[in-house]
Image (cartoon, rainbow, N blue to C red; front, top):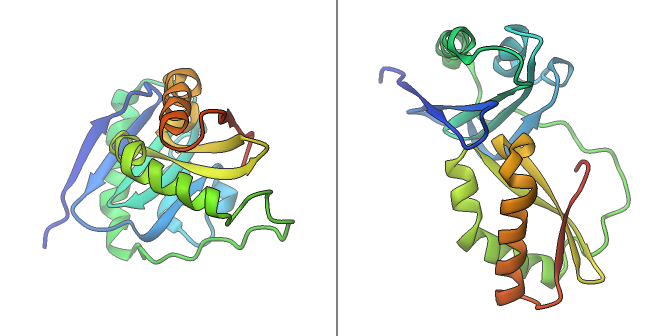
Amino acid sequence: MKTQLMIQSTPNPNALKFVLNMPVKTTGNWTYKSAEECAANPLAGAIFALNPHIKEVYFFDNYITVTQDGSVDWEGLEERIQKTILEKIGSHNPDFATPEPEKKAAPAGNGSPEMAQINEILDQTVRPALQMDGGDIQLVDYKDNTLRVFYQGACGSCPSATMGTLKAIENILKDQFNPDVVVELADAF
């Protein structure tokens, strides 16, 4: 099968979605914030090496979302990213290992029935749209009616994610989960 790649814009002007006809991550998703994090994923490292203004490379299902800081023109960079992906995808392992998170205390409410219910609601309402736009959302913790979330991929630096999307998520959860819930952005996950 010949590798095909399609480039899609996202609502975030600083992020592009590179969609392939094969998986780039078979289970889960992963966000790289720097080239130093890419030891287990040479494809991600090669993308970072293209330009110092690339700030994030996100792998999910059959696409890679690349986010830059907004100071370079996409026209030339887009072609270089496409060429790099097509050159490296043949040796890319979609089951690449993700680094073990630092051992920290589990966030409050993590793994709770409430978090499971919230995840189910988001899976049915919000995640499909975020994933179509080249991103996703992770739950950090839920404590005292406050849900902290972390955006991934194109959503991480999208201007509409911080206010509009966050408020929409809160309204959905108020309607379907708890009328007193508050949704906040976490600095990191």
